[in-house]
Image (cartoon, one colour):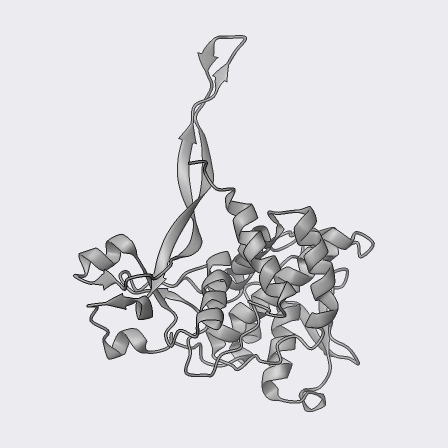
Length: 290
Protein backbone atom coordinates (compact mmCIF):
# COMPACT_ATOMS: atom_id res chain seq x y z
CA UNK A 1 0.00 0.00 0.00
CA UNK A 2 1.46 3.36 -1.02
CA UNK A 3 1.94 5.96 1.68
CA UNK A 4 -0.64 8.73 1.47
CA UNK A 5 0.37 12.20 0.40
CA UNK A 6 -0.35 13.78 3.78
CA UNK A 7 -0.62 17.41 2.70
CA UNK A 8 -2.76 16.57 -0.33
CA UNK A 9 -5.17 14.54 1.82
CA UNK A 10 -5.62 17.36 4.31
CA UNK A 11 -5.98 19.99 1.59
CA UNK A 12 -8.58 17.93 -0.28
CA UNK A 13 -10.69 17.73 2.89
CA UNK A 14 -10.51 21.50 3.41
CA UNK A 15 -11.29 22.25 -0.25
CA UNK A 16 -14.28 19.93 -0.20
CA UNK A 17 -15.59 21.64 2.93
CA UNK A 18 -15.21 25.11 1.40
CA UNK A 19 -16.88 24.03 -1.83
CA UNK A 20 -19.79 22.74 0.28
CA UNK A 21 -20.09 26.12 2.01
CA UNK A 22 -18.50 25.03 5.29
CA UNK A 23 -15.72 27.14 6.79
CA UNK A 24 -13.93 24.77 9.20
CA UNK A 25 -12.09 27.53 11.06
CA UNK A 26 -15.30 29.50 11.67
CA UNK A 27 -16.92 28.30 14.88
CA UNK A 28 -20.48 27.12 14.16
CA UNK A 29 -20.96 25.57 17.60
CA UNK A 30 -23.05 26.49 20.60
CA UNK A 31 -21.18 27.91 23.58
CA UNK A 32 -21.36 24.57 25.41
CA UNK A 33 -19.23 22.98 22.70
CA UNK A 34 -15.47 23.26 23.18
CA UNK A 35 -14.00 24.71 19.95
CA UNK A 36 -10.60 23.18 20.69
CA UNK A 37 -10.52 19.38 20.41
CA UNK A 38 -8.77 17.35 23.09
CA UNK A 39 -7.44 13.83 23.41
CA UNK A 40 -9.46 11.74 25.86
CA UNK A 41 -6.48 9.61 26.89
CA UNK A 42 -3.86 12.34 27.46
CA UNK A 43 -6.13 15.32 28.17
CA UNK A 44 -4.03 17.44 25.81
CA UNK A 45 -5.46 19.82 23.24
CA UNK A 46 -4.85 19.19 19.56
CA UNK A 47 -3.01 21.94 17.72
CA UNK A 48 -2.52 23.48 14.28
CA UNK A 49 -4.39 21.97 11.35
CA UNK A 50 -5.76 19.18 13.57
CA UNK A 51 -8.02 21.70 15.32
CA UNK A 52 -9.77 22.47 12.05
CA UNK A 53 -9.88 18.89 10.81
CA UNK A 54 -11.51 17.64 14.01
CA UNK A 55 -13.88 20.60 14.28
CA UNK A 56 -14.93 19.89 10.71
CA UNK A 57 -15.62 16.26 11.58
CA UNK A 58 -17.77 17.39 14.51
CA UNK A 59 -19.75 19.67 12.21
CA UNK A 60 -20.36 16.93 9.67
CA UNK A 61 -21.15 14.16 12.17
CA UNK A 62 -22.87 16.25 14.89
CA UNK A 63 -20.76 14.79 17.69
CA UNK A 64 -21.78 16.21 21.10
CA UNK A 65 -18.21 16.31 22.42
CA UNK A 66 -15.01 17.46 20.75
CA UNK A 67 -12.97 14.69 22.39
CA UNK A 68 -10.93 12.12 20.50
CA UNK A 69 -8.93 8.94 21.00
CA UNK A 70 -6.82 6.53 18.97
CA UNK A 71 -7.65 2.85 18.52
CA UNK A 72 -4.80 1.79 20.83
CA UNK A 73 -5.85 4.32 23.47
CA UNK A 74 -9.39 2.92 23.44
CA UNK A 75 -7.98 -0.56 24.03
CA UNK A 76 -5.77 0.64 26.89
CA UNK A 77 -8.84 2.22 28.52
CA UNK A 78 -10.76 -1.04 28.29
CA UNK A 79 -13.21 0.18 25.65
CA UNK A 80 -13.82 -0.53 21.98
CA UNK A 81 -14.86 1.18 18.77
CA UNK A 82 -18.47 0.68 17.73
CA UNK A 83 -18.93 -1.60 14.74
CA UNK A 84 -18.88 0.19 11.40
CA UNK A 85 -17.36 3.45 12.68
CA UNK A 86 -14.76 5.26 10.55
CA UNK A 87 -11.76 7.18 11.86
CA UNK A 88 -10.64 10.74 11.10
CA UNK A 89 -7.18 11.54 9.74
CA UNK A 90 -4.96 13.95 11.66
CA UNK A 91 -1.32 14.97 11.27
CA UNK A 92 1.53 14.13 13.59
CA UNK A 93 5.01 15.52 12.99
CA UNK A 94 7.63 12.89 13.80
CA UNK A 95 11.19 13.99 14.59
CA UNK A 96 13.71 12.10 12.47
CA UNK A 97 17.50 12.26 12.18
CA UNK A 98 18.85 11.93 8.64
CA UNK A 99 22.37 10.86 7.84
CA UNK A 100 23.24 12.12 4.37
CA UNK A 101 26.24 10.79 2.47
CA UNK A 102 28.71 12.99 0.61
CA UNK A 103 29.28 11.08 -2.64
CA UNK A 104 32.57 12.85 -3.43
CA UNK A 105 34.17 12.21 -0.06
CA UNK A 106 32.36 8.89 0.37
CA UNK A 107 31.56 9.70 3.96
CA UNK A 108 28.51 10.72 5.96
CA UNK A 109 27.88 14.38 6.70
CA UNK A 110 26.64 15.71 10.05
CA UNK A 111 23.24 14.37 11.11
CA UNK A 112 20.28 16.56 10.10
CA UNK A 113 17.11 16.86 12.18
CA UNK A 114 13.88 16.94 10.16
CA UNK A 115 10.18 16.58 10.94
CA UNK A 116 8.13 14.28 8.74
CA UNK A 117 4.33 14.43 8.60
CA UNK A 118 2.51 11.21 9.40
CA UNK A 119 -1.20 10.49 9.29
CA UNK A 120 -2.78 9.19 12.49
CA UNK A 121 -6.32 7.92 12.87
CA UNK A 122 -8.60 9.02 15.71
CA UNK A 123 -12.17 8.36 16.78
CA UNK A 124 -14.60 10.62 18.57
CA UNK A 125 -15.63 9.31 21.99
CA UNK A 126 -19.19 9.15 20.64
CA UNK A 127 -17.94 6.36 18.36
CA UNK A 128 -16.69 4.34 21.32
CA UNK A 129 -18.21 2.15 23.99
CA UNK A 130 -16.91 1.16 27.39
CA UNK A 131 -15.13 4.46 28.12
CA UNK A 132 -15.53 6.26 31.43
CA UNK A 133 -16.45 9.89 30.74
CA UNK A 134 -15.98 12.08 33.82
CA UNK A 135 -17.51 15.50 34.35
CA UNK A 136 -14.06 17.11 34.39
CA UNK A 137 -13.25 15.68 30.97
CA UNK A 138 -16.42 17.21 29.52
CA UNK A 139 -15.76 20.70 30.84
CA UNK A 140 -14.64 23.42 28.47
CA UNK A 141 -10.98 24.44 28.44
CA UNK A 142 -10.10 27.22 30.88
CA UNK A 143 -10.63 30.72 29.53
CA UNK A 144 -8.15 33.55 29.88
CA UNK A 145 -9.23 36.44 32.07
CA UNK A 146 -10.76 38.56 29.32
CA UNK A 147 -10.50 39.38 25.66
CA UNK A 148 -8.86 42.67 26.55
CA UNK A 149 -5.98 40.83 28.19
CA UNK A 150 -4.81 39.51 24.81
CA UNK A 151 -3.77 43.03 23.82
CA UNK A 152 -2.94 44.17 27.36
CA UNK A 153 -0.49 41.28 27.80
CA UNK A 154 1.01 41.56 24.33
CA UNK A 155 4.65 40.45 24.74
CA UNK A 156 7.41 43.05 24.63
CA UNK A 157 6.62 46.08 22.42
CA UNK A 158 2.96 45.96 21.32
CA UNK A 159 1.57 47.56 18.14
CA UNK A 160 -0.15 50.91 18.58
CA UNK A 161 -3.95 50.60 18.71
CA UNK A 162 -5.85 53.46 17.03
CA UNK A 163 -9.47 54.21 16.21
CA UNK A 164 -10.18 54.32 12.48
CA UNK A 165 -12.91 53.94 9.89
CA UNK A 166 -11.74 50.42 8.93
CA UNK A 167 -9.91 47.52 10.50
CA UNK A 168 -6.36 47.02 9.29
CA UNK A 169 -2.79 46.41 10.38
CA UNK A 170 -0.10 48.70 8.95
CA UNK A 171 3.33 47.02 9.13
CA UNK A 172 5.31 50.16 8.23
CA UNK A 173 4.10 51.97 11.36
CA UNK A 174 3.34 48.85 13.42
CA UNK A 175 -0.17 50.16 14.00
CA UNK A 176 -3.62 48.58 14.24
CA UNK A 177 -6.59 50.63 13.11
CA UNK A 178 -10.05 49.51 14.22
CA UNK A 179 -13.48 51.21 14.48
CA UNK A 180 -15.04 51.92 17.89
CA UNK A 181 -16.69 48.98 19.61
CA UNK A 182 -20.13 50.58 19.30
CA UNK A 183 -19.75 50.46 15.50
CA UNK A 184 -19.84 46.66 15.61
CA UNK A 185 -22.90 44.45 15.87
CA UNK A 186 -21.58 43.00 19.12
CA UNK A 187 -18.60 42.98 21.46
CA UNK A 188 -17.74 39.53 20.11
CA UNK A 189 -17.53 40.88 16.57
CA UNK A 190 -15.25 43.66 17.75
CA UNK A 191 -12.89 41.28 19.51
CA UNK A 192 -12.87 38.81 16.63
CA UNK A 193 -11.84 41.64 14.31
CA UNK A 194 -9.20 42.85 16.77
CA UNK A 195 -7.84 39.30 17.05
CA UNK A 196 -7.55 39.12 13.26
CA UNK A 197 -5.41 42.26 13.21
CA UNK A 198 -3.37 41.18 16.24
CA UNK A 199 -2.46 37.96 14.44
CA UNK A 200 -1.33 40.04 11.46
CA UNK A 201 0.87 42.10 13.80
CA UNK A 202 2.75 39.03 15.01
CA UNK A 203 4.19 38.71 11.52
CA UNK A 204 6.14 41.98 11.86
CA UNK A 205 9.89 41.67 11.19
CA UNK A 206 10.63 42.42 14.86
CA UNK A 207 8.43 39.52 16.00
CA UNK A 208 7.78 36.30 14.06
CA UNK A 209 9.02 37.82 10.79
CA UNK A 210 6.29 36.21 8.68
CA UNK A 211 6.67 36.67 4.95
CA UNK A 212 3.14 37.94 4.29
CA UNK A 213 3.67 40.86 6.71
CA UNK A 214 7.42 41.45 6.85
CA UNK A 215 7.49 41.45 3.04
CA UNK A 216 3.94 42.69 2.46
CA UNK A 217 2.89 42.94 -1.16
CA UNK A 218 -0.80 42.76 -1.99
CA UNK A 219 -0.01 42.30 -5.68
CA UNK A 220 1.19 38.80 -4.80
CA UNK A 221 -2.19 37.07 -4.47
CA UNK A 222 -0.81 33.83 -3.06
CA UNK A 223 1.16 35.51 -0.26
CA UNK A 224 -1.70 37.91 0.48
CA UNK A 225 -4.31 35.13 0.57
CA UNK A 226 -2.08 33.01 2.79
CA UNK A 227 -1.58 35.83 5.30
CA UNK A 228 -5.33 36.52 5.40
CA UNK A 229 -5.94 32.82 5.95
CA UNK A 230 -3.41 32.79 8.80
CA UNK A 231 -5.17 35.77 10.40
CA UNK A 232 -8.60 34.14 10.01
CA UNK A 233 -7.43 30.89 11.57
CA UNK A 234 -5.53 32.68 14.32
CA UNK A 235 -8.55 34.82 15.19
CA UNK A 236 -10.61 31.65 15.46
CA UNK A 237 -8.01 30.15 17.81
CA UNK A 238 -8.03 33.29 19.98
CA UNK A 239 -11.82 33.35 20.07
CA UNK A 240 -11.77 29.76 21.25
CA UNK A 241 -9.12 30.43 23.88
CA UNK A 242 -10.95 33.47 25.26
CA UNK A 243 -14.31 31.73 25.09
CA UNK A 244 -16.20 34.19 22.90
CA UNK A 245 -18.85 33.22 20.39
CA UNK A 246 -17.34 33.91 16.98
CA UNK A 247 -20.22 33.04 14.64
CA UNK A 248 -19.59 36.41 13.01
CA UNK A 249 -15.84 35.94 13.06
CA UNK A 250 -15.42 36.93 9.43
CA UNK A 251 -17.96 39.19 7.81
CA UNK A 252 -15.87 39.18 4.65
CA UNK A 253 -15.05 35.45 4.65
CA UNK A 254 -17.11 34.82 1.53
CA UNK A 255 -14.97 37.28 -0.42
CA UNK A 256 -11.86 35.29 0.42
CA UNK A 257 -13.20 31.78 -0.11
CA UNK A 258 -12.78 31.79 -3.86
CA UNK A 259 -9.18 32.97 -3.70
CA UNK A 260 -8.44 30.45 -0.96
CA UNK A 261 -9.80 27.63 -3.09
CA UNK A 262 -7.70 28.63 -6.06
CA UNK A 263 -4.56 29.00 -3.97
CA UNK A 264 -5.11 25.68 -2.20
CA UNK A 265 -5.30 23.98 -5.58
CA UNK A 266 -2.01 25.60 -6.60
CA UNK A 267 -0.21 24.81 -3.36
CA UNK A 268 -1.31 21.64 -1.58
CA UNK A 269 0.79 22.47 1.51
CA UNK A 270 -0.62 25.96 2.01
CA UNK A 271 -3.49 25.16 4.38
CA UNK A 272 -1.24 23.02 6.60
CA UNK A 273 1.41 25.74 6.73
CA UNK A 274 -1.18 28.45 7.38
CA UNK A 275 -2.56 26.55 10.37
CA UNK A 276 0.95 26.11 11.74
CA UNK A 277 1.70 29.84 11.38
CA UNK A 278 -1.65 30.69 13.00
CA UNK A 279 -0.82 28.45 15.97
CA UNK A 280 2.59 30.08 16.36
CA UNK A 281 0.97 33.52 16.29
CA UNK A 282 -1.47 32.57 19.04
CA UNK A 283 1.31 30.96 21.09
CA UNK A 284 3.24 34.22 20.78
CA UNK A 285 0.26 36.29 21.93
CA UNK A 286 -1.11 34.27 24.82
CA UNK A 287 1.37 31.45 25.41
CA UNK A 288 -1.43 28.91 24.95
CA UNK A 289 0.17 25.47 25.14
CA UNK A 290 -2.57 22.89 25.38
